[in-house]
Image 1 (cartoon, helix red, strand yellow):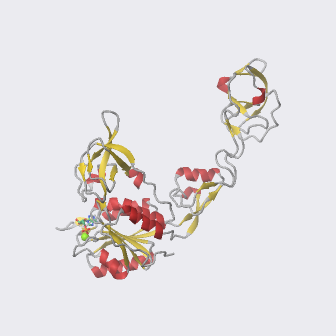
Image 2: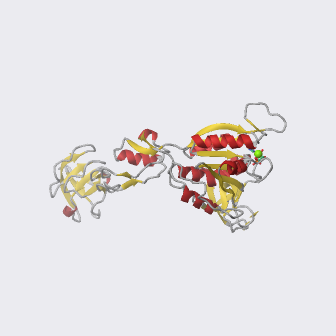
Image 3: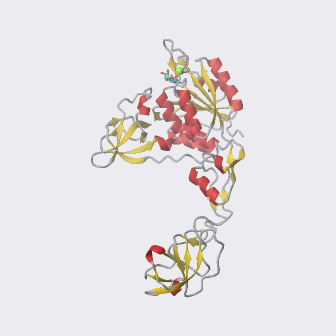
Length: 416
Ligand code: AMP
Ligand code: MG
């Protein structure tokens, strides 16, 4: 199960580029979870274990795509008039073969009779009093038909191992006749907040304290990423307590996630706790917001320590924790394609780190999509997340953005 040895990483740099962190995760983390059978009704959001190979052709038989008249294209002339013989409706068994020189009344989804290769839409033809159908010229052979297996061929891979199943994936499995499928068990994630100042909502707020935003945030994000979350509450800024709690949690969980306490301050004990009982993989990422992000291993179980500032926790969850959860879950790495949009703001940044700005997309007066940066960009400004709808991703070498530049936009809806 545990695939991380305590010495499988080597990192000597000061700030680790995100690409490098992703490479470390991809190279060293594999699925930990066993597999289980789930019914299709419960399969949305689950991670497929093993390819689904199509047991049948889809569609299972050649059929009509419209209501109309099935013909043999060899019978077609400039103007064609054919007697209508027989009727084929959806769900009917295959009728007799279509006789040359005749048409058959057919409805959407009905089996295409043997010999027929083309269907005229009923709107395009005329029936005369003798019951013959008058067909216009110009219809190509095969029109308005669906070939057997044109969607998926029996024996082809319909859905790949590691697919995080979406409604359309489950629908494809259903159309292939599957009632259930094999999925990974959701990974077990242990979640902690840290900090002597952090208290649970619903309790009185004493001077110097603040309510825990990160635990509810990260629990929701982790569940959306497919993890099963155990909420372990808030740890005090105590090296001993943190060390013990993290070690205990790694014994019963596939991943431990904390927030706060990963910087270099006197009261930042998470990193030192990892070093004391396990192995630190990295703890400083070239990312803003969020520079301190610790990843470690205790007895083969990975641990990720996110920063305490809620915005930094949010961004680093997307950048690091989510790919980590995917890798442990046996899921393909989450697709993160930043869409090019026009910047409607100016910004300066340091080169050498990737920066994420909270932005809102608006339709500018000229009709173009434009990203507007939230005016308050502190890492603790939670309302800057509620008042925006995505992140503008600025690559490591970028140092300035001016209005009109193209920036990459990652909608929150695609990140989580
Ligand atoms: P730290 O990384 O522990 O130094 O925390 C950085 C900042 O984030 C501090 O201002 C903390 O008070 C704040 N913070 C830490 N944990 C939380 C939390 N769970 N909810 C809200 N704010 C937090
Ligand atoms: Mg703290």
